[in-house]
Image (tube, rainbow, N blue to C red; front, top):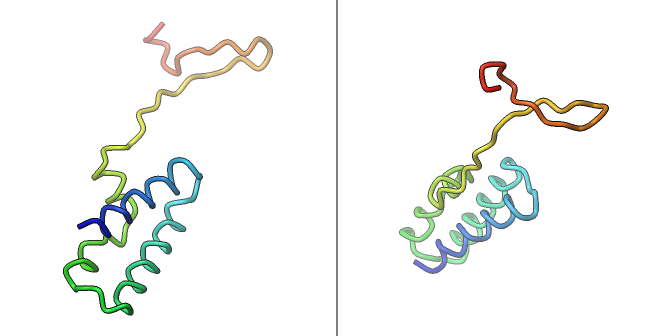
Length: 86
């Protein structure tokens, strides 16, 4: 469904590129779902829109992978957090 796909892309862009928090994205999803229900869009479409933005992030497999480092405040060199790595 193109409406559902557009909602997924909108939330992914707002969260990942615009820096909107997950709680604000959840509110936006709720508002979109409510607007579609009020506009008499089919129940299949509205039920396909998630209420949790993490569903969108998981669907697109956009979970970031990160690695923690310690940074020297004087020279800004980065070191692994674990001593066993170096």
